[in-house]
Image (cartoon, rainbow, N blue to C red; front, side, top):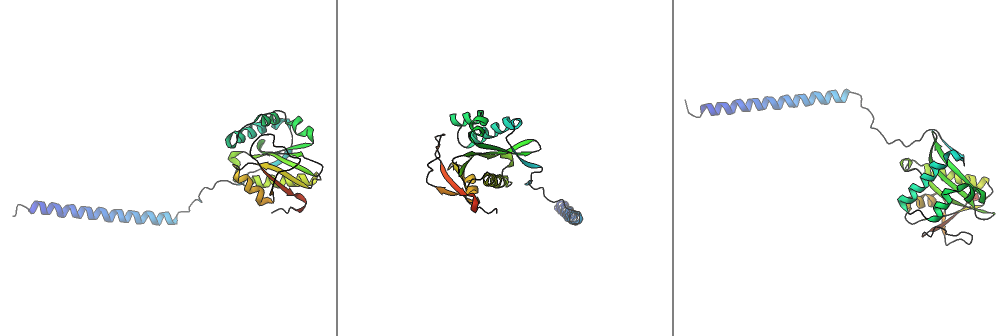
Length: 212
């Protein structure tokens, strides 16, 4: 017998074992695939876009703290909180409502998830102010829904147009305004930029607006 026979036999045995293992793994994978294909698959979890139980409500003091925080949070995140912002947010009743203005809240299950204000500019025009949606609720078309609500409110209050001031940094908001029908204008004789921020002036004729 050759000295190399045990080595050769060992190699053959190892080869046989490896081949058996390979076939076993292949068969196991095939069985798994057949079971997997027959088993009902759960649909992938999707980001919930629909917010249940939402309603618009006019100014209510019980929502004041939530709306103040909501406005302060987005201003600090995207722009800056100016003295004028603090003045208006600290006393919205006198700064807005007592100045022929209206404040509206978008509420879901007693949580303020959006807010905006309409402030009279002149007898024919109002200004859209403090328009924001809570961050975790963005991307669900609530901004569009709230903007349409503002347009309908302006129309019901007998205004002919809405004007607003936005900022170049607020690209998504500006896109929403444009998509809804607002046009960029070069300033406005009755609007004063009290925040000192670089602003884009926009305007919409509410009588011509068609809800998309």
